[in-house]
Length: 355
Image (cartoon, rainbow, N blue to C red; front, side, top):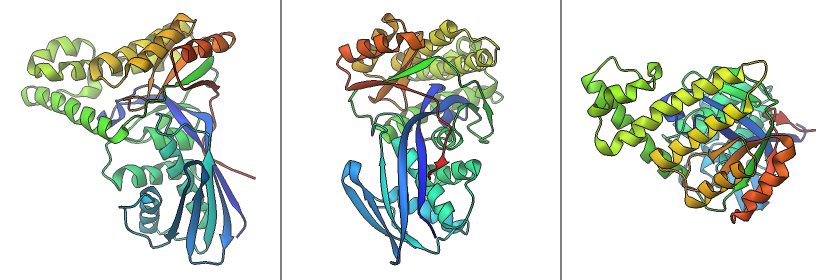
């Protein structure tokens, strides 16, 4: 079998962070920061994986089963694909590298899983079906670990473009990809994805269950912003900010979805919605940090339409939405806050074969 190259993009969530674990829709897009996986057949009985960016090397057998090591994402995907009948007939030497900032909220780990799953399918002689790659990657990264995340990362990376995603079924709608310019600001503050998602998800679900005990017919997917006032007395005081964020962020996502389907986009209103989303993430859910808040504020003062923290939070990155001719000014403003990096990203097409 010939050499295989897979390219998997990172992703940003524009609207809907901390919504996918509630089964609510998100608006996300793939970006042109990528993970590259290059594989050359070898004559051995195992995969040899070199990851020079992080100075790690693994040797993995096709029948590997232990999820306790640092190669757990690779092993999880092998376990999932074996259950679906995909077992590579050949072994390979692989090199994996990329330019997605690590542990920063741009889904570098999910891009790695997507690239690995796509490679395994190709190594088994299968064509690359983006929906299949997304589903199997989700099974590997989330279900195999009982992880707290949802479908967003794997589906937005695999499918590409700007999508409105049903995080329960995986069905999606492709939205406009000409949306002005996105600037990513990297705080340099490492985030803690699993801990943050698990804690916030559990507490938000607890608030919703308190309402449903008194009002069994309550369905978050059918909620409106008025439901916060209607039901807040049923929720413990310490959980109220999380319930408010769930209700209002869902409303923001729906409004943004409607606006993004218009023939002419009102980027000022969309940017304002993005900032409203950030405030709820920061003030109600508590997943931002002072530096990221400062980066968002600086971007908007320099002319960005809006900005927000990206990903699970606790650090990581932010995104600013601006006109193309404002990008350099926005980058300078973000860097002046003490950020580690800032750069423009473009919307990407999703998982791709190289060569």
